[in-house]
Structures are given as C-alpha cells and as structure tokens.
Image (tube, helix red, strand yellow):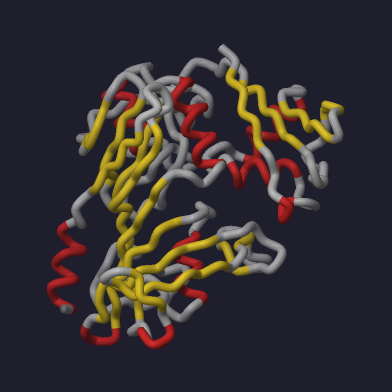
Amino acid sequence: MEQIINLTPDPYDVGVRLDKYISEELEDISRSYIKKLIDKGNISVTSQGNERRIKASYLLSEGDEVRLVLPEPEKLEIIPENIPLDIVYEDEDVIVVNKPQDMVVHPAPGNYSGTLVNALMYHCGESLSSINGVERPGIVHRIDKDTSGLLVICKTNLAHQGLAQQFAEHSINRIYSSIVYNHFDIDKMEKDGDFYTLVVNKPIARAHNDRKKMAIDPDGRRAVTHIYLQENLKENYAYVKCKLETGRTHQIRVHLTSINHPLLGDPVYGPKSCPFNLKGQVLHAGTLGFIHPRTGKYLEFNSELPEYFTKLLGRLK
C-alpha cells in the first residue's frame, strides 16, 4: 500500500536542493532512496497551485509544497538475530527500545549484522514498517552507535507515516543527558525553575572539508538546542541535559562543541584523547515523547542513565 507524506518548507529552506531538504526533514530516508523516488516520479512540488515533477537538483522556492508517494517496498531480506532487546513499550503499531551504547541502529555497508534492526527482525518477524525498504525496516529515526537510550520503531506503515510527519514538524519531545568539558558560567545563563539554561541557535550543514562531519554553517539548516545545566562537576566537567527543538545530524555534539563544551568521550568533535577509557561520547537519550499515530494520545517514556554514566557522575560529583 502506498504512503503519502506532505512537507511544507520554511522560508529559510528557499534555495535548498530538494533531495537535501527531504533527507534532512525525514532524517532516516536516505538521499539515494529519495533520488530513486524522484526518478520514478514519486515526488512532486506544488508551486502557485501547479503540481509538477522535478529533479533532485531542484531548488526550493517560496510557497512550495512537497509531496512524497512512498511505494509498496520490496520484501525484507535482513537476517534476524537473537540479540536481547530492552523493550520499554510495545503495541501493534510501535515499539520503544532502550538501545545500549556501541550498537549500530541499522545495517550499512561493512556492518550487516549485530544491529538493532537484526534484533528487531528476530523479535518482530515481518511485523515492521516497510517504508524504508530492506535495510531499515521500522526505522523512523536513529541515534549514533555510541549514544545510548530511547528509540521508537514503527511496526506498521500507518505508524511510520504518522511519526515521520511528527519528526518533520519537530514536535517529538527528545531530551538527552551528557557530561561535557568545562564549567558553565551561570552568570551568562537564564534561570528556568531549578536549572540554569541557555539556547544554542546555530544552523548546521555538512562540513566542507570532511563529509562525515557536520559543522556550524550560516547557510545550513536551522538547528536549536536548549541546554539545562544540572551541575558543574569536579575536574572542570559539567552534567547537562539537552532538549532538541530541531533534530539535525550530530546536532547536540556540534552545538556543544561550538560553545566550548564538547561532549566527554567524543572522538570526532572533542579532544582526541580521553582520560576515562570511554567507548564514545557520554550521551544518553533519556526522554522520548510523541503522539501515538493511531490513538492520538501523547506517550512519554524515560530511561535511567546507563551504569557507565552513573559511575562517571559519581566519580566527578
């Protein structure tokens, strides 16, 4: 069964390539898959009341409306693996899991086993949404390999379409915990209840000198992170929570680095050496909230900090 997603670009999207815009709005639909959809005529743009097929290189104009028709996908061929899952919630439409650090979300070249998707295929069989094709069944968003915490996976295409729309609209509630370098100066922060807070509003784009990295770029996509200081720790570290207003790739990592508070253990955006023998950045997706695509009710889930995180906090308090 075909699925339809409608997107309305913001004024700051004017001049952005169509395939780039869609890949960043629907964060887990790959650019190569978008190009295939465009080539097949499954993506159109309506401008001034006229709907037309376009090329991937089309530059968005003011007032454009983008329409995606996602076809019935090919049969899934991921190899199921009996990997334990920490299931926080499950019903006929969605499953919320607590991903451990050091687990890749979906298969990719050179890494086709041991992923969250392999585990989901074993647990759910073919009861996963198929919108993203054979390599990413059920996946509507993702977190980095070395980031732990909550993800929602779609078991039906109805759920996938509904949640993809919420991610595109940035209405999903996502809060992350992290330990970062350097104390915060509370005199330069606003007081919000029991916490001092600041907002980082800096656009993000692919780094020009390294396509695997993201960077602050005035021509990039709008990116906003709300940072809540939990505590300044010993040895010039700090414990913070970050609430995403938008959800760009590596957003928290790039934003915190841009204000001189890189994530502890981040080998890409932080110092190359780490004194605590960590596996990667100290970042945990602890809160996830969304509107259930079938019932219309708001659901929110919370995950306790992983053991390595709490031990490190105890050491630095």
